[in-house]
Image (cartoon, rainbow, N blue to C red; front, top):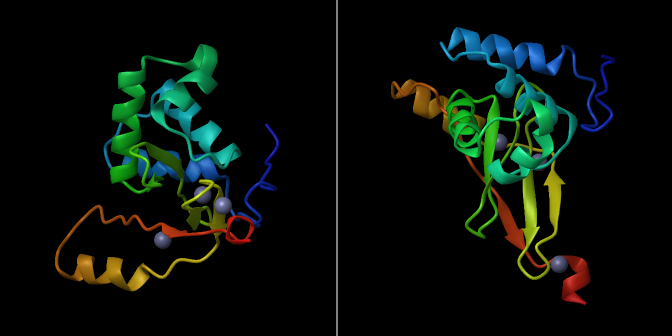
Length: 151
Ligand SMILES: [Zn+2]
Ligand SMILES: [Zn+2]
Ligand SMILES: [Zn+2]
């Protein structure tokens, strides 16, 4: 399979899936075929996708949606996925390994989502680790009224 990182706008130094799988193994999570399929879809497409949306996309590689939901939670806890809360009650997940980390601004009126390719949470995570917390992650989304809706 050719490396295609054109979607993320970065020159990813390593193969994103391999790095994420290494983290799963290091954290004692099983590397199953459905988990590989989920990571492959999420590394290739921005999403972010809910468990239901991933279930539809996985096709033959799929498993039941409860297993997908649990796997997404487990992979989010070890930081290879990021959970996005756009304020509509649906949890969506996106790939979060290496250079694939960013945040979003969501329009309160039309619900459009734009990527913010910056993160300011490093110091917060460092402080949490200094306090002895492990498996530290963060969620942060920005909300506003987009230029089109503001006209
Ligand atoms: Zn809008
Ligand atoms: Zn995103
Ligand atoms: Zn961040």
